[in-house]
Image 1 (cartoon, rainbow, N blue to C red):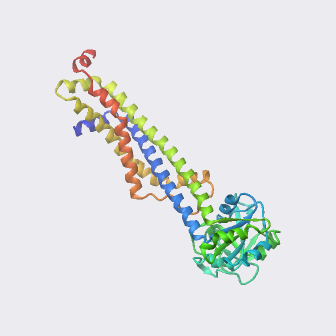
Image 2: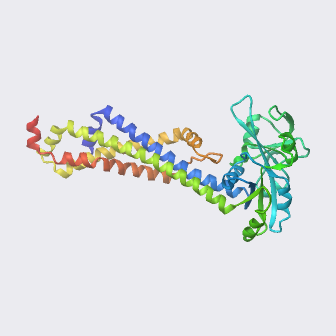
Image 3: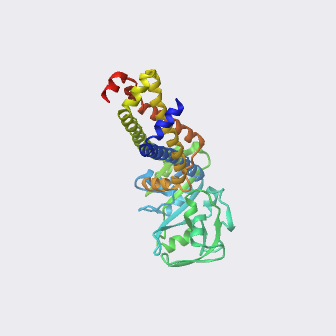
Amino acid sequence: MIRLIFRSVTSRPLRSILTFAGIAIGTAVLICLIAFGEGYRHGLQRELDRSGVQMMLVPLGCPYDAAARVLRNNTLETALPEAALRATREDPAVAVAAPLLIAAVPHRNDKRTDLWVGIDETALLLKPWWTVKSGNRWFATSNEVVLGADVAAVEMRAPGDKLFSPEANCEFRVAGVLNRSGTSDDSVFFIPLATAQSVFGRTGTLTAIAIRLKDPALAREAAARLQRIPGAQVVTVTEMMGTFLNLIGAVRTLVLALAAIAIVVSALTVFNTLLSAVIERTRELAVLRAIGASRAQIFLLLIGEALLLTLFGALAGIALAFGSGSWIEATAKGWLPLAPSGVLLSISPHIIIRCSLLALLVGAIAALYPAWRASMLQPAIATKSE
């Protein structure tokens, strides 16, 4: 039986190769999308956990969008009055209130936008995991800059080097380079808050205030008081988590939709190949029936061919997933808002096993009708028709 299955599959090489390729592509897309979906969810959770923020004070507008943008070091169209910082720090429930001024500066020479973030020393209390690859993680003078890992690599700068920004029309001295954190901090230029306000013409204003409470149980009372600050609104970590969970839900929907398309295409490929094979091999199958093959054996023969094609296609799909994973990740990141930094697509063994088993199941199901049709052939009638 096994030798007959191999002979049947290899007797029509072009059709088998096309079927094989369709299954491989479908399996690769399925593996990459599921791996990306899981990586996206874990990445968002990691960035929220590492932000050290329990509450965010943002300008009036959409609070959820504002909080999500600030956590990703993105700019806002509106601003907070600096007086909101004093009011926040005076609240008895607030342990740390770290002001942020975020400016997006388009780079003239390259098609990229630099993110500059003005901070004061309270930012270090929210980011205790910050470590430096070289230099210092804080500023000795007002014209110094601390570079994220990716920024330092792009700018090719080390501590002590000068960094001139024609877009900001200002020269800085590199104070330090941060170790890679896997968050959006890797792509940021950090400068003193007062310097950022002066350079970007934002004197007296802030983008947001990141807050850590003395006791998380005080969140409701603190939010009620901070909500009364003119021109500001409060977003708690629970609300931010809800926003991120909605993003994760959108990712899952996208993944399931694209995975369903990949599965349907693979199933149709197997179905079309086997149905065509049954029609073309009517005499051959009838002869097998005439020399004693049972209907069950004919049925299993076609199912075996489908499983063989699907198995080799799935193995090729696994190799293709590893080869094209980075491209698929880059494409998917372009579709999705607030995609976490770092590598999100990590193909784990359990994802490979799940997708391979699903591919085999889809192949077997797609072969059911062609196999049943082949098993129902009447030897005498089929032979006579030839």
